[in-house]
Image (cartoon, rainbow, N blue to C red; front, top):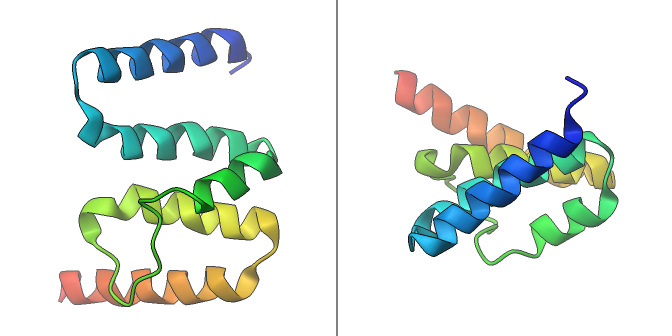
Length: 102
């Protein structure tokens, strides 16, 4: 909404808080949020860096508790033009969602 500098400062403060309070288990979700913003701005380096993170893994059954991470991975694949991996992950997510709703 036109307040990129303020938003970046807030994200920096949140990351510092998570590290200071030893809430490291929340860092992957925070990283997904931060990366999503950069991907939506067309940042190829952010997309590549996201896919190199230890918590981004290819799996046959995506975990629901990591749904935000999975959708950030989808966004990264789209930005980088890897539509085969995008489709595969989306199909796995759809299958998992249908299973949960049934």
